[in-house]
Length: 277
Length: 121
Image (cartoon, rainbow over the protein chains, first blue to last red):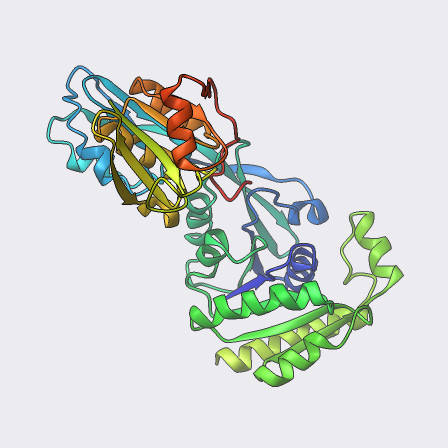
């Protein structure tokens, strides 16, 4: 079973929920897909590099190039500009390495060369196996790395995927193959605004979903009313609490010190199991 | 000589569009015949590389100069590769054309904006 913890708005508590849910379940795999700043490991411990992630990008043989522009016309993202008679520009940061330019070139002037975009790390913490992706600084594309993280789900056991924030491509990729989405939000107008966007994405993906309200007690009742109107299940309310803030900010997990929260998270998982069936 | 003005409308009464890659219209102007061809910019909704696409179009149309508001680094590099000179102007397209004809426009010698790709502004 694959459960994705997502949010829309950043900083609502995705990682807190993901890490603590994994710890109460034990015997599961936690995958941190926030590859621009993976931070599950901050709460769990040391990680070792598991595999490098390589992308193939076009390599141009200008001796063979006739500057016919087939490649530039094909490229949807304008990563290649061809100015006859003899200028070819390649904008690496626009390339979504699809390999299409090499296929349409009739002069064998485009090959492929490997580029390392980041790595996947692994760590064992009791029964929890944590993988995370680290995108190299300056790399523009998170999706290919997240795709590799998605491939770790072999369908055997429970996989919890901690999503990046937002509702764009990296989140959509993280949701691929999921059985259930947990949306973590805060009860504020900002939290509600981005929750609505995230609900749209998850519904588009055709997935069942539930909401966890973090820092319950601050803000207003907008999120509660929205969930009621939309018939969205609120799985859990985590109260605004100084104890949580102190544990979090000293890099500790919550469930060892908060047995009530541990019980609640176990109940959340039981509920997800019922829904997924 | 052919020249391209990024514009918010389809004729010389329109304002110069401050954006190049994501402008509304390209006005392709032949300075000898004073003819104006307006081309709607398909790059407005491009997922990325709008500036590069615009620069390629301008090069394909045989333009020797571009008048716009701002240029990003990739559009600038593409125009430079094509030997197309870029000039900055704020105001109506017809005034831009007149200033160009009188040699009063200021060259954009480098990118005047950072890259927007990836949603940066």
